[in-house]
Image (cartoon, rainbow, N blue to C red; front, top):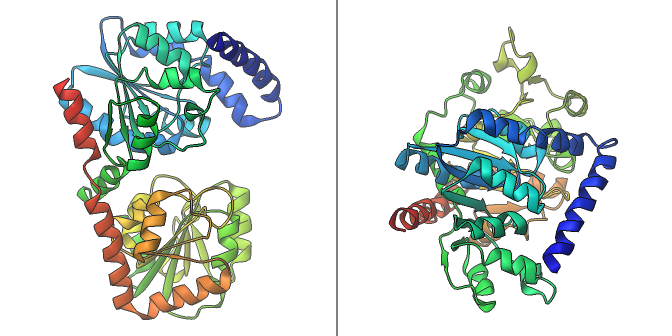
Length: 413
């Protein structure tokens, strides 16, 4: 009965989204994109193909699942891979990515869509990443006896699986053959409701960012911009609340420093407003052609795809998202390169941040004055920078191994 009510709710939600799409571009993208899902699958996947399907809510979950998917492609090259997203923010960025044979939107979770989708994907293995659970699809996969795993999972006591009204979500959770959790607390939570096929593997993002050290991280235009300056500070994935903290420092500091800003929002209107706040010479990626980059104090990366490499040039990094309410961005990307990291005060929902704050690899600032003091101290004290950087790089190094544990399970089953 609960499944029926849930399915009716999905149908109602579909109608509501149709109306909201008239006023919301992101919702409209999702609706129009889902209309193409089966068409893409027909073009990319044939009835005779062996397939592996990985589902991600959005871009962050994709980054967690990607190292597992890459290893599976190496180990089982005869299989085609399908990646699905629920959110446009993941799909629109990765729809043409070479990491999968087909990238699609996940259809809304109705019984009919679940059957239709699985008919076209016909996977031998399903991977769900982190937390997104869709009962109709998972229960249909269970009915078809398809091996399904949940990887890099995290659970909280306030989730529906652990409430009296959450029997349907609990049933969907039990459809996974095995669950790999990021931490001990998550493992203990699902064991309390009787799910015992669970392992603590850790977070696959540690493996993902560690792979960054294996590639060439050279960025020619950044090298030209820095021009062997003594100190480089990178502000990564910043939002307006972050700008309010660091722009006063950039405008007032007279030391020989180069600043790189890689904002989360790269729309022209936002970049223009950012430049207007700066009182020093700034250049953007979009208009750097023909310019002598070394003459500028600030480089704004108003495009995507470079930040992972750009972090390698930093002496100090500020990671955005925790100054406001948008959520802290990935601190592991800079941590792997071994430099001190600064974040805003709202980081409590991010376990890796809490650990590194406790270990003193990360400094937390609440306002522009605290950021000024923290940056000034790190700029002057090279030993402090090295000590905090070592804490961060060692933390990443010591937490690798989730991918290998997951691959070992898949290979031996």
